[in-house]
Length: 133
Image 1 (cartoon, helix red, strand yellow):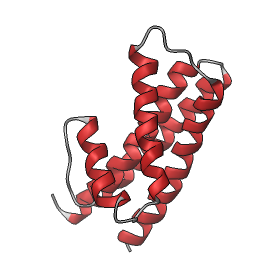
Image 2 (image 1 turned 180 degrees about the vertical axis):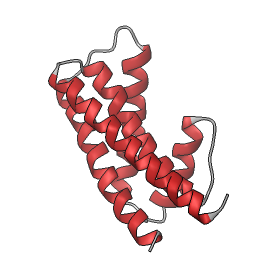
Image 3 (image 1 turned 120 degrees about the vertical axis):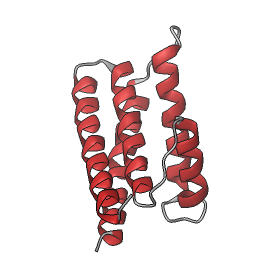
Image 4 (image 1 turned 120 degrees about the horizontal axis):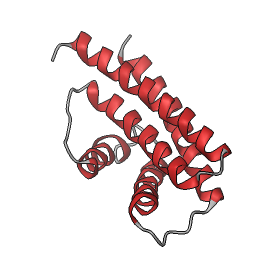
């Protein structure tokens, strides 16, 4: 994949992350917290994939994307270490929201997921801008 295509894919993915974030906020405001958790997670996931597009590298499974990102971007502190924990938590909450019929949704936890997505988008946009100069 050419550098130009990688940059375009990265920018496309961050735009998808922003769209997912808007959807998450709309769902949250409508008190649809399980669905808001899902969209917040996908905002986080697409942000991570925006970073990986610049290598370019990709994986089929979500857990592989997250593990690679944590190993290559969180552990060496390209992104803050606490973000790694928040990403793992968002993944767990999304899975529970989507697949556990007995999962009790906590609106405050949902708001935390939305805040994590916002922060990661901000960090990733800064990273992309620096890499694509």
